[in-house]
Length: 303
Image (cartoon, rainbow, N blue to C red; front, side, top):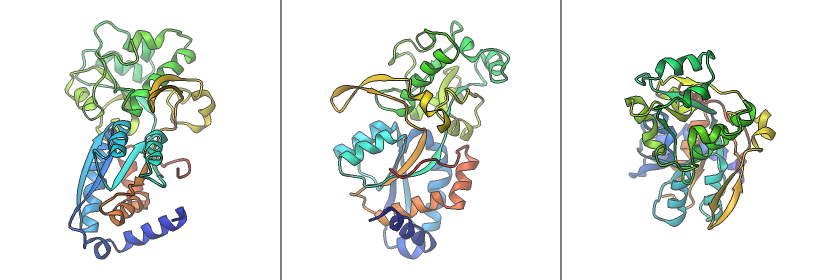
């Protein structure tokens, strides 16, 4: 099916969701990048379910990890929402996805806990009174991030720190703040990272601005030259690299745009509901919800 036809049909479904979708007694199952937990489970999922007369079940986790589970058949859902194209490509190679549509975008920030004993210094960094990276180097500060082997955000903070090292002329900045790429003292699941921050278990963490705003957490904004959110700096972003195992062999990867993509799975139990959900998210109502939760309009073409 051509992309234009896909969107036309999906938009038509939104206009008549109760009659089109009510025949399915099953839940609409959506696997989504874990950072979207607040907007998916508090707003988009429940509101769509009420409008369409269907159930909703959300499954949030690292997008790469979810993609591998879906590709292997160990997880089955109707819809997959990824951040960055990488996880979508896994499902396209597995023959489970034809097209994916951009629905939102975000950028990297440094979130921090108002309960942290470093909250005063972190707040000063947010105001620009002190370099943020100097605060993160303070002895005893606990920094959290996700696993770069399973989650795009885990990769994104490595890219951001590499770019920051060049931008601030601090060659070993990434090593001083992060340690090794998979430093076990810093790595948490995406679903738990910001909740640990909220509770004060960690002092600061990497984060997508969208997720951080959704939870009303304070954060430090980063220059567009390093935050991976501005397509105008795509050439600069591509200077950052990571060596990691992909498809059973070591590969060099570069930053991908922080755009969220939604794709219907070919083995979906309820593909009509999945298509209608994409149309709902891309409608003025859906975009308003995303904006309220800190997401920006998407950039880029369908994959």
